[in-house]
Length: 338
Image (spheres, rainbow, N blue to C red):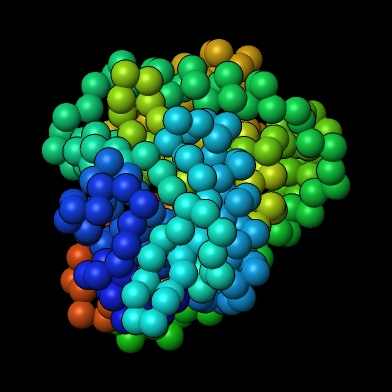
């Protein structure tokens, strides 16, 4: 569906539940989310990028069902079903029964946005308790998932890191030459790190550290309820989900540190390592810091895509700056140590 069609659905569409409730639209880089009453409806954008392909209706249908299946591991009560979006004349509707699909939507239980971890971090309303709960939850999740027996190409990391170069002209144009140079320096350092650490990285799967993870573990994808709810895992590319557990938890630690909560990041990491018993010596610590830089790079890339879609947004521009600066900080921290 195109943006104008989404707006028609929001304004005049027929929904299966809470029809009289007001509909609020949230747009991300790759999806539209419609909040209505007690429910949320997620629609994937008709888009093809270097790391995902939602360019056909059949592909969007497939990934809707994958998202439903995979997220029920950590957010079973939140993810409910997949429905068709149909159109009769000028009337858009979300159908619970058989219908000729113009699009597909994931039905989810609506959650309180004030309980989203990123919102709590911004308002300084987070304590140690839910962070320790998250450490326990992730430790249990990773240990319950089977270790993946695979041959891992460590240069996948440096290639994905360097993928941000595709957006370098946008970064230079919108943020200036200094940020462009920072990105180029970080790419060079990343390439060098992976080249020198390739043997250590490639052995990690053999040691049982690669799992079918969440893949996108940052604060915006966590609701702090009685028990934390971790949602919106990666469904569109298996390689982003079949990852090293240190890569997984580095994302959340990086995010906590970006918001200024280095103390909570340390508590989370310490509890997680203690509960799993996973090795965390000097080499693992170096790799963990690299993973934090890698995750900063991914967030910078995602927000750069949003910056291209919303060029007048100063808020998105500041997010890109923040993550590029964080990426550089982590790479400088490990430079000369590998």
